[in-house]
Amino acid sequence: MPKPDLILLHAPSVYDFRNVPQLYGPASDLVISTPAFEMYPIGFSSIVEHLEQSGCHVRLVNLALRMLRSARFDAEKFIAGLNAPVFGIDLHWLVHAHGAIEVAKLVRKHHPKAKIIMGGFSASYFHRELINYPEVDFVMRGDSTEELMLRLVRAVTKGDAVGNIPNLIWKDASGIHDNGLTHVPDNISNVMQNHYLAVARSVLRFFDFTSTIPVKEWLNYPVTAVLTCKGCENDCVFCGGARSAVRRTVGRERTAFRTAQDIFNDIKNISKISRGPIFVLSDIRMGGEERAYELLRLLKRHPVRNTIDFELFTPPTPAFIEAIADAKPGFAIDISPHSHDINVRRAMGLDYTNEELETGISAALAAGASRFEVYFMIGLPEQTPESVEETLDYCDYLYRKFHADKRLLLFIGPLSPFLDPGSPGFEDPEKYGYRLIHRTLEEHRNALVRPTWGETLNYETKWMSRAQIVESTYTAIERLMGLKQQYGLVSQRQADRQTDRIRKVREMEKHISEIVKSGSDDGRLAALKPEIDLINGVKSLDRRQIKVPMGLTRLRYLSTLVEMIKKWKLLEGK
Image 1: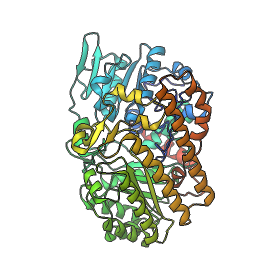
Image 2 (image 1 turned 180 degrees about the vertical axis):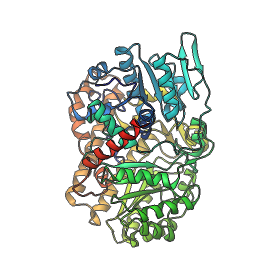
Image 3 (image 1 turned 90 degrees about the horizontal axis):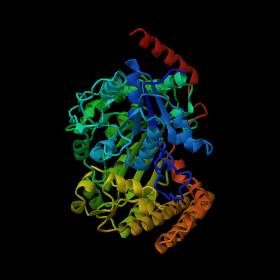
């Protein structure tokens, strides 16, 4: 087996989640990954692709996934058995603050001569604090670091100086050095091409398929995503990817858009290896609708069988829906109005009416959409417990208006676990009615190992305390489940199972709170772990409902092998 030049490690949210007693509740019900947040960022695969094309060997290891799949998997022993001059650990989402640092400690323990790089949005934001951890040698800032990572890996392996590599903060015996944040490319067409095949090639090179799986259930549900831009035109209050947040965190002054052809190429390449749904991330209408219409023209001329789910930030017009339906029959739409209340929505940074939303839903369903997903949130500016109740009234109204169409899927969940660092709300909490409870990286690391998800929240609002956010969330989930059962969208058995789950979560949360308030644990929390794990093990019905239905054929193994051989021949010819 060849020795890699770089090993990329993706840590679980909490490193020792298999031993820590934690009640997850509904904090991750509306994402594909489990509460260990095992899904690694897209940037991992683009780094693999770019470095492999340049002659560097990169091994990707989803450590979180390996730990999830087997209770016998010894993560420390596995790390000790790795061998590379450079290890890269992502700290993209802040939810990995605990696991990422703990994994870095293990790498340092077993590979004291290796260099450790941290990168991602959260690493970029907390770069000055992060570089002070003794386990961290480099922090790579920015959202487009493929070429910089190549330069850094080459410099480390050759023993060259790193002082001229942009976006890098690093330390040596003389202290901490900051090379400045100057690499923020507007043209991102040279990345994210065939990145899934690049990862697949890594499987053959290192004989390690399991370590590259993105999420626990991916083999049965091979969902993929296509990045359409870096940055955003919107400035939503809670989002670390908002316009002002990316300016602050990664120095991006304007959104970098991928071309319609590049986006289509990604979709076409994915369709060669998977029949799973393809999520087109970020509203393709941003930056002008012409790019969106060009993508739709390409999809019409070169059809793919996969369901394509378009993420939209504002409701679609009937004309736009007509164009999508013409290009990709059976399309899916998802949108997050956050609240039914226009005042809450405006406070979040979005400004459209419920009538516009309903017009978009109506047009999509009439045009043959396979799904129209609508997501509401709890923990927003101007939002009260009464407002959350009114959002459920609005859900009831939507079910009645659209005759409980099964293609209309409504979801509600908490803004958790964190108000994103760099977001407008995090930077100026008083302006938006937030009160921050955790600010530093270390405070967030400590919060992640608290025994309940409510204690992990790094905020409360002027209108809702953390306890009220938690209670409103439970009440809302129960009521929405009742509505789905009432309108025949779920069975009585399914509804009862979820109601029982919430009841048990509430009871356990009270039990845990009593222990915490007593100030003396005496091992009682640890003793509760088997019961907590049973409650955590009951799958959320919402997580099942967000999955797009698929046929029996999911992955195209033979086609994948053919495409890898083609790509290898191209690389050998360079």
